[in-house]
Image: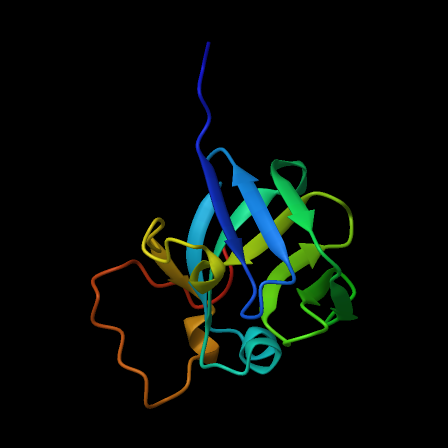
Length: 133
C-alpha cells in the first residue's frame, strides 16, 4: 500500500487548519503585481496542489483577485492562506503557512518582469519573465 505524504498547516490564530496530501505539481515564487498586492509582500512563495488534495478545517473568507482566482484567508486573523482557482482545479498554498515552513523549497521564479527593483535574485533558480505552465 502506497503511503502518501501529508503536510499540515494553518493560520496565525489557529482558527483555520489544512492538510495537503501528496506532492505539489510546482513550488514557485511569483512576483506578479496581483500577488504582491494580495499577499502584502514583494512576492508569493507557494506550492500548487490539486484542490482535491487539500482538506480545510475552520471558516475561511475569499476575495476575487481576478476572473480566475480567489484569495482565501482567515477572517479572524487575516492570514493569507491560498490562491484558489475558481474553476475547481488548483490551489496555491502559501509556503510559510505550513507547520514545517522548510518542507518545500521553491524551484523557480515567475513573473520576474514585475519584480520589485530592490529585490536581488541570486539563489540560482530559473527565472521567467511571465508565468509558466
